Image (tube, rainbow, N blue to C red; front, side, top):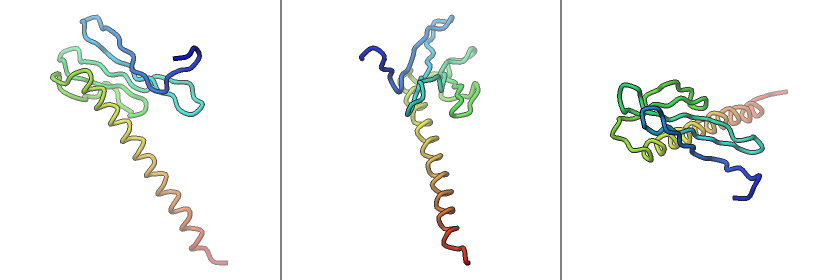
Length: 108
């Protein structure tokens, strides 16, 4: 990768005090600088996976059982984020469609 060019989506791995791995998903779009949009980590009392995310509006939210591998957990999270953005597209498309229909229903 050339100097000065940042990845749009990147997982950063961190070793926790208990020896488990945690991950931060960094994402940037358009002209926005990449930022942390999700943390993925194992629970303190169990090996279950949890997330905290501004995009998904989660805070220590259970994701998957402890038997889920690191890569599987990351894939689950990416699928959830993709579904979130697809839902937002549908929502705004419905609003746009209603707005367009509103023009046709007006009478002078």
